[in-house]
Image (cartoon, rainbow, N blue to C red; front, top):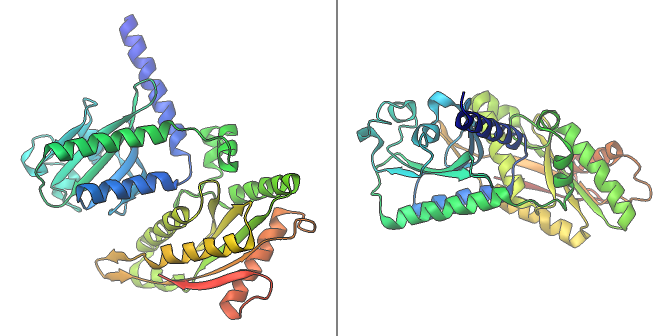
Length: 347
Protein backbone atom coordinates (compact mmCIF):
# COMPACT_ATOMS: atom_id res chain seq x y z
CA UNK A 1 0.00 0.00 0.00
CA UNK A 2 1.43 3.38 -1.05
CA UNK A 3 1.60 6.60 0.95
CA UNK A 4 -1.44 8.02 -0.91
CA UNK A 5 -3.48 4.93 -0.04
CA UNK A 6 -2.47 5.17 3.61
CA UNK A 7 -3.49 8.84 3.76
CA UNK A 8 -6.81 8.07 2.05
CA UNK A 9 -7.51 5.19 4.44
CA UNK A 10 -6.67 7.35 7.45
CA UNK A 11 -8.96 10.11 6.13
CA UNK A 12 -11.86 7.67 5.81
CA UNK A 13 -11.23 6.34 9.31
CA UNK A 14 -11.25 9.86 10.77
CA UNK A 15 -14.53 10.64 8.98
CA UNK A 16 -16.10 7.39 10.21
CA UNK A 17 -15.05 8.17 13.79
CA UNK A 18 -16.55 11.66 13.55
CA UNK A 19 -19.86 10.33 12.24
CA UNK A 20 -20.06 7.73 15.01
CA UNK A 21 -19.40 10.49 17.54
CA UNK A 22 -21.98 12.86 16.02
CA UNK A 23 -24.67 10.19 15.92
CA UNK A 24 -24.53 9.99 19.71
CA UNK A 25 -25.77 13.55 20.26
CA UNK A 26 -29.26 14.76 21.26
CA UNK A 27 -31.75 16.55 19.02
CA UNK A 28 -30.98 20.23 18.43
CA UNK A 29 -33.46 22.92 17.47
CA UNK A 30 -31.00 24.73 15.19
CA UNK A 31 -30.91 21.78 12.79
CA UNK A 32 -34.67 21.27 12.98
CA UNK A 33 -35.12 24.94 12.11
CA UNK A 34 -32.72 24.77 9.18
CA UNK A 35 -34.49 21.70 7.77
CA UNK A 36 -37.85 23.50 7.90
CA UNK A 37 -36.42 26.63 6.29
CA UNK A 38 -34.90 24.58 3.47
CA UNK A 39 -38.15 22.70 2.87
CA UNK A 40 -40.14 25.93 2.63
CA UNK A 41 -37.56 27.76 0.52
CA UNK A 42 -37.41 25.01 -2.10
CA UNK A 43 -41.08 24.04 -1.92
CA UNK A 44 -40.44 20.32 -1.45
CA UNK A 45 -42.18 17.65 0.57
CA UNK A 46 -39.07 16.63 2.51
CA UNK A 47 -35.90 18.27 3.79
CA UNK A 48 -33.31 16.43 5.83
CA UNK A 49 -29.94 16.89 7.49
CA UNK A 50 -28.14 13.63 8.07
CA UNK A 51 -24.84 11.96 8.84
CA UNK A 52 -23.42 9.32 6.52
CA UNK A 53 -21.07 6.41 6.98
CA UNK A 54 -20.49 3.06 5.31
CA UNK A 55 -23.27 1.49 7.37
CA UNK A 56 -25.98 3.94 6.37
CA UNK A 57 -27.61 7.29 7.02
CA UNK A 58 -28.63 8.75 10.38
CA UNK A 59 -30.98 11.77 10.40
CA UNK A 60 -30.09 14.70 12.63
CA UNK A 61 -33.19 16.62 11.50
CA UNK A 62 -35.95 15.75 9.04
CA UNK A 63 -39.27 17.33 8.14
CA UNK A 64 -42.00 15.85 5.96
CA UNK A 65 -40.86 12.24 6.35
CA UNK A 66 -41.16 9.79 9.23
CA UNK A 67 -37.67 8.31 9.26
CA UNK A 68 -34.83 8.13 11.78
CA UNK A 69 -32.15 6.13 9.96
CA UNK A 70 -31.59 4.09 6.80
CA UNK A 71 -29.19 1.30 5.86
CA UNK A 72 -26.71 2.23 3.14
CA UNK A 73 -28.64 0.28 0.48
CA UNK A 74 -31.75 2.42 1.09
CA UNK A 75 -30.01 5.79 1.39
CA UNK A 76 -30.54 8.08 -1.59
CA UNK A 77 -28.07 10.58 -0.19
CA UNK A 78 -25.33 7.94 -0.06
CA UNK A 79 -26.08 6.92 -3.64
CA UNK A 80 -26.10 10.47 -5.00
CA UNK A 81 -23.01 11.62 -3.11
CA UNK A 82 -20.80 8.78 -4.30
CA UNK A 83 -18.44 11.33 -5.84
CA UNK A 84 -18.89 13.75 -2.91
CA UNK A 85 -20.33 16.60 -5.01
CA UNK A 86 -23.70 18.31 -4.86
CA UNK A 87 -26.28 16.91 -7.26
CA UNK A 88 -29.89 17.62 -8.26
CA UNK A 89 -31.99 15.22 -10.33
CA UNK A 90 -35.23 16.55 -11.87
CA UNK A 91 -36.81 13.08 -12.22
CA UNK A 92 -35.32 10.15 -10.33
CA UNK A 93 -37.16 7.63 -12.52
CA UNK A 94 -35.21 8.85 -15.56
CA UNK A 95 -31.71 8.73 -14.07
CA UNK A 96 -29.75 5.49 -14.29
CA UNK A 97 -28.32 5.97 -10.79
CA UNK A 98 -31.70 6.15 -9.10
CA UNK A 99 -34.48 4.68 -11.28
CA UNK A 100 -34.26 1.32 -9.47
CA UNK A 101 -33.59 2.72 -6.01
CA UNK A 102 -35.89 1.36 -3.23
CA UNK A 103 -37.09 4.85 -2.27
CA UNK A 104 -38.02 5.52 -5.89
CA UNK A 105 -39.59 2.17 -6.72
CA UNK A 106 -41.45 1.78 -3.41
CA UNK A 107 -42.80 4.09 -0.69
CA UNK A 108 -42.35 7.03 -0.49
CA UNK A 109 -41.74 6.87 -4.29
CA UNK A 110 -39.57 9.96 -4.57
CA UNK A 111 -39.30 11.56 -8.00
CA UNK A 112 -37.03 14.53 -7.23
CA UNK A 113 -33.89 14.91 -5.14
CA UNK A 114 -31.25 17.56 -4.53
CA UNK A 115 -28.37 16.72 -2.18
CA UNK A 116 -25.37 18.71 -0.98
CA UNK A 117 -22.50 17.24 1.09
CA UNK A 118 -21.62 18.44 4.57
CA UNK A 119 -17.89 18.40 5.30
CA UNK A 120 -15.91 18.75 8.49
CA UNK A 121 -13.23 21.39 8.96
CA UNK A 122 -10.68 19.15 7.19
CA UNK A 123 -12.85 18.56 4.13
CA UNK A 124 -14.02 15.04 5.05
CA UNK A 125 -17.60 14.38 3.95
CA UNK A 126 -19.56 13.37 7.04
CA UNK A 127 -23.14 14.15 6.10
CA UNK A 128 -25.65 15.69 3.75
CA UNK A 129 -28.46 18.19 3.48
CA UNK A 130 -31.11 17.04 1.04
CA UNK A 131 -34.59 17.80 -0.27
CA UNK A 132 -36.94 15.24 -1.82
CA UNK A 133 -40.35 15.31 -3.46
CA UNK A 134 -42.84 12.85 -4.90
CA UNK A 135 -43.20 15.03 -8.02
CA UNK A 136 -40.49 15.97 -10.54
CA UNK A 137 -38.93 19.45 -10.20
CA UNK A 138 -37.14 21.67 -12.66
CA UNK A 139 -33.55 22.23 -11.60
CA UNK A 140 -33.04 25.98 -11.86
CA UNK A 141 -30.13 28.26 -11.00
CA UNK A 142 -32.10 29.55 -8.01
CA UNK A 143 -32.67 26.03 -6.73
CA UNK A 144 -28.98 25.17 -7.07
CA UNK A 145 -27.98 28.36 -5.22
CA UNK A 146 -30.51 27.69 -2.46
CA UNK A 147 -29.10 24.19 -1.94
CA UNK A 148 -25.56 25.55 -1.85
CA UNK A 149 -26.59 28.14 0.76
CA UNK A 150 -28.38 25.50 2.83
CA UNK A 151 -25.35 23.22 2.69
CA UNK A 152 -23.05 25.99 3.85
CA UNK A 153 -25.39 26.89 6.70
CA UNK A 154 -25.64 23.27 7.82
CA UNK A 155 -21.88 22.90 7.68
CA UNK A 156 -21.35 26.08 9.68
CA UNK A 157 -23.84 25.00 12.34
CA UNK A 158 -22.13 21.63 12.61
CA UNK A 159 -18.74 23.25 13.14
CA UNK A 160 -20.02 25.68 15.78
CA UNK A 161 -18.97 24.65 19.24
CA UNK A 162 -20.78 26.14 22.22
CA UNK A 163 -19.21 24.80 25.40
CA UNK A 164 -21.09 27.13 27.74
CA UNK A 165 -24.20 25.05 28.43
CA UNK A 166 -24.63 22.00 30.62
CA UNK A 167 -25.36 19.77 27.65
CA UNK A 168 -22.26 20.89 25.77
CA UNK A 169 -20.06 20.43 28.83
CA UNK A 170 -21.42 16.93 29.39
CA UNK A 171 -21.03 15.99 25.72
CA UNK A 172 -17.43 17.19 25.75
CA UNK A 173 -16.65 14.87 28.68
CA UNK A 174 -18.17 11.73 27.20
CA UNK A 175 -17.08 9.53 24.34
CA UNK A 176 -19.62 8.11 21.87
CA UNK A 177 -20.18 4.86 23.75
CA UNK A 178 -20.85 6.63 27.06
CA UNK A 179 -23.18 9.10 25.35
CA UNK A 180 -25.11 6.19 23.89
CA UNK A 181 -25.92 4.98 27.39
CA UNK A 182 -27.42 8.39 28.26
CA UNK A 183 -29.50 8.95 25.10
CA UNK A 184 -32.93 7.57 24.28
CA UNK A 185 -32.62 5.50 21.11
CA UNK A 186 -36.11 6.29 19.81
CA UNK A 187 -36.41 10.05 20.32
CA UNK A 188 -32.71 11.08 20.41
CA UNK A 189 -33.35 12.96 23.64
CA UNK A 190 -31.49 12.37 26.88
CA UNK A 191 -32.91 9.34 28.66
CA UNK A 192 -33.88 9.28 32.34
CA UNK A 193 -30.33 8.59 33.47
CA UNK A 194 -28.91 11.39 31.36
CA UNK A 195 -31.69 13.77 32.40
CA UNK A 196 -31.07 13.14 36.10
CA UNK A 197 -27.36 13.69 35.62
CA UNK A 198 -27.98 17.05 33.95
CA UNK A 199 -30.59 17.99 36.55
CA UNK A 200 -28.10 17.26 39.34
CA UNK A 201 -25.53 19.47 37.61
CA UNK A 202 -28.14 22.21 37.07
CA UNK A 203 -29.07 22.20 40.77
CA UNK A 204 -25.43 22.43 41.82
CA UNK A 205 -24.80 25.29 39.39
CA UNK A 206 -27.96 27.14 40.51
CA UNK A 207 -26.92 26.95 44.17
CA UNK A 208 -23.41 28.13 43.36
CA UNK A 209 -24.53 31.15 41.34
CA UNK A 210 -27.80 31.85 43.21
CA UNK A 211 -29.95 31.11 40.17
CA UNK A 212 -33.24 29.28 39.68
CA UNK A 213 -34.18 26.03 37.94
CA UNK A 214 -37.49 25.22 36.29
CA UNK A 215 -38.48 21.57 35.86
CA UNK A 216 -41.61 20.39 34.08
CA UNK A 217 -43.02 16.98 33.29
CA UNK A 218 -45.00 16.25 30.14
CA UNK A 219 -47.24 13.20 29.93
CA UNK A 220 -49.20 12.07 26.86
CA UNK A 221 -52.83 11.48 27.76
CA UNK A 222 -54.30 8.09 26.79
CA UNK A 223 -51.27 7.22 24.69
CA UNK A 224 -52.31 3.58 24.75
CA UNK A 225 -55.23 4.52 22.48
CA UNK A 226 -52.78 5.73 19.84
CA UNK A 227 -50.92 2.43 19.89
CA UNK A 228 -54.19 0.46 19.84
CA UNK A 229 -55.67 2.41 16.93
CA UNK A 230 -52.62 3.13 14.77
CA UNK A 231 -50.10 0.53 15.92
CA UNK A 232 -46.87 0.77 17.87
CA UNK A 233 -44.89 1.91 14.83
CA UNK A 234 -47.05 5.02 14.50
CA UNK A 235 -46.89 5.45 18.26
CA UNK A 236 -43.12 5.68 17.90
CA UNK A 237 -43.54 8.31 15.17
CA UNK A 238 -45.77 10.36 17.48
CA UNK A 239 -43.17 10.24 20.24
CA UNK A 240 -40.40 11.33 17.86
CA UNK A 241 -42.51 14.23 16.56
CA UNK A 242 -43.36 15.28 20.10
CA UNK A 243 -39.68 15.13 21.07
CA UNK A 244 -38.75 17.43 18.17
CA UNK A 245 -41.54 19.85 19.11
CA UNK A 246 -40.29 20.02 22.69
CA UNK A 247 -36.72 20.69 21.61
CA UNK A 248 -37.93 23.46 19.27
CA UNK A 249 -39.88 25.08 22.11
CA UNK A 250 -37.07 25.63 24.59
CA UNK A 251 -33.96 27.80 24.69
CA UNK A 252 -30.63 26.47 23.36
CA UNK A 253 -29.22 26.14 26.91
CA UNK A 254 -32.30 24.26 28.17
CA UNK A 255 -32.78 20.56 27.55
CA UNK A 256 -35.39 17.86 27.10
CA UNK A 257 -35.30 14.22 28.08
CA UNK A 258 -37.55 11.20 27.78
CA UNK A 259 -38.10 9.74 31.22
CA UNK A 260 -39.65 6.61 29.78
CA UNK A 261 -42.76 5.53 27.89
CA UNK A 262 -44.78 8.64 27.06
CA UNK A 263 -43.34 10.87 29.80
CA UNK A 264 -40.84 13.68 29.18
CA UNK A 265 -38.97 16.26 31.24
CA UNK A 266 -37.86 19.79 30.38
CA UNK A 267 -35.16 21.57 32.40
CA UNK A 268 -34.82 25.36 32.22
CA UNK A 269 -31.99 27.05 34.09
CA UNK A 270 -31.77 30.64 35.36
CA UNK A 271 -35.45 31.41 34.77
CA UNK A 272 -38.07 33.50 36.61
CA UNK A 273 -41.62 32.39 37.33
CA UNK A 274 -42.93 34.66 34.56
CA UNK A 275 -40.38 33.35 32.07
CA UNK A 276 -41.21 29.79 33.09
CA UNK A 277 -44.92 30.38 32.50
CA UNK A 278 -44.13 31.98 29.14
CA UNK A 279 -41.96 29.00 28.20
CA UNK A 280 -44.76 26.61 29.11
CA UNK A 281 -47.12 28.58 26.90
CA UNK A 282 -44.58 28.41 24.09
CA UNK A 283 -44.49 24.64 24.49
CA UNK A 284 -48.28 24.56 24.42
CA UNK A 285 -48.47 26.55 21.19
CA UNK A 286 -45.82 24.45 19.49
CA UNK A 287 -47.42 21.16 20.38
CA UNK A 288 -50.93 22.37 19.52
CA UNK A 289 -49.75 23.05 15.97
CA UNK A 290 -48.68 19.45 15.41
CA UNK A 291 -50.70 17.28 13.04
CA UNK A 292 -49.29 13.84 12.34
CA UNK A 293 -50.75 12.50 9.12
CA UNK A 294 -51.15 8.79 8.56
CA UNK A 295 -52.90 6.64 5.99
CA UNK A 296 -55.63 6.07 8.57
CA UNK A 297 -56.14 9.78 9.20
CA UNK A 298 -54.60 12.59 11.21
CA UNK A 299 -53.33 11.78 14.69
CA UNK A 300 -54.28 14.33 17.35
CA UNK A 301 -54.00 13.94 21.08
CA UNK A 302 -53.57 15.79 24.34
CA UNK A 303 -50.81 15.97 26.92
CA UNK A 304 -50.67 17.13 30.51
CA UNK A 305 -47.84 19.36 31.72
CA UNK A 306 -46.89 20.22 35.29
CA UNK A 307 -43.86 22.12 36.49
CA UNK A 308 -42.10 23.58 39.52
CA UNK A 309 -39.42 26.07 40.44
CA UNK A 310 -37.95 24.15 43.41
CA UNK A 311 -36.72 25.83 46.56
CA UNK A 312 -33.00 25.15 46.28
CA UNK A 313 -32.56 25.55 50.03
CA UNK A 314 -34.55 22.36 50.61
CA UNK A 315 -34.23 20.54 47.26
CA UNK A 316 -31.39 18.14 47.94
CA UNK A 317 -31.39 15.56 45.16
CA UNK A 318 -32.39 15.46 41.50
CA UNK A 319 -34.71 12.51 42.16
CA UNK A 320 -36.57 14.54 44.81
CA UNK A 321 -37.05 17.49 42.45
CA UNK A 322 -38.18 15.18 39.70
CA UNK A 323 -40.71 13.63 42.04
CA UNK A 324 -42.10 17.07 42.97
CA UNK A 325 -42.47 18.01 39.30
CA UNK A 326 -44.14 14.67 38.62
CA UNK A 327 -46.67 15.36 41.38
CA UNK A 328 -47.35 18.78 39.83
CA UNK A 329 -48.11 17.12 36.51
CA UNK A 330 -50.54 14.68 38.11
CA UNK A 331 -52.23 17.56 39.91
CA UNK A 332 -52.81 19.13 36.51
CA UNK A 333 -54.48 15.94 35.37
CA UNK A 334 -56.92 16.23 38.27
CA UNK A 335 -57.09 19.74 39.74
CA UNK A 336 -54.96 22.84 39.36
CA UNK A 337 -51.91 22.64 41.66
CA UNK A 338 -51.48 25.36 44.27
CA UNK A 339 -47.70 25.59 44.25
CA UNK A 340 -46.78 24.62 40.73
CA UNK A 341 -47.03 26.11 37.31
CA UNK A 342 -49.07 23.77 35.14
CA UNK A 343 -51.43 23.45 32.23
CA UNK A 344 -53.17 20.98 29.99
CA UNK A 345 -52.87 21.24 26.24
CA UNK A 346 -54.02 19.70 22.99
CA UNK A 347 -52.34 18.98 19.67
